[in-house]
Image 1 (cartoon, helix red, strand yellow):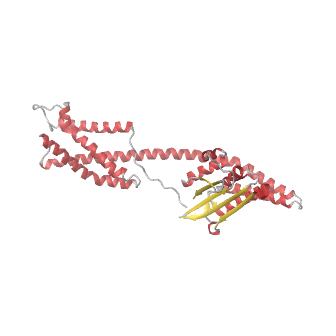
Image 2: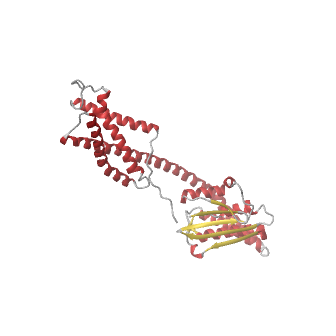
Image 3: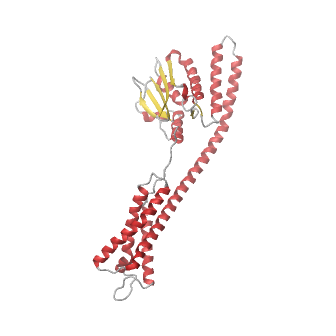
Length: 357
């Protein structure tokens, strides 16, 4: 059986985060501009350094950080978004390998524009700083990005773990409260069965089967998984009781390979589906009908099919509003195996419910 695996998805910025990114770049562009002014470097107009001059700000640092923003978008798309279904360490490695080449390409593009317009820039050995500083800046930026994504993922996991702990506590309390009734009823059924006269053997047999249902329900509620054979024995007992009520109106066909009986399945996973078929599919028909349960292995998965020749249903979206049994079964399959209950029309009439583990 397979279980779903989660992969980290890159975080798309919302409006607030996009504004924060813009302010992040503007702050460091302004900081770099002030550092140049403090050290007497960069451009000057009329022999004086005007650090509040917008034109000087653009040529000294604004243009460079705009190029860095464009380069960071390219790195994000190539190294993170494109690898969004890969592990995070691969994204980090891709970013680390992309940064030097992107920093060099940005410098060459910016130098080409500056030389064409006749403005000054670093030359000779000093030009290496226009690769080193942008490279360090991009490393710092994406380090912040990965730290932020991990922070958000950790917050999400902590919230989910808290919700799961609360749900587990509620389930544990509910199970403690619910254990009394099945245990009490099981003992009562055994007492009734023992008191039934020998000539009413059919009644004794029905009470015994009902007691077996409660015994299985009580023991299975403590387990995560049970053998398929035990689950099918429980369903057969349930169907035997229903057949005593419907008599010839209910026909049952069970198609399952004995080699699959040792497979582990969640307890009480089939009975709600079978009950729904009888209650809503076959019960309204005077002549009754047939239920076919098929279980087979395909591509490493255990596939289930419960089909009935009942009245069927046109609007299949309302079927989960009929009761808790089928709704809870769908939720269990979604949470445990990331699989869905599939509802199909059965030929010549009726409903077929399928799922895979």
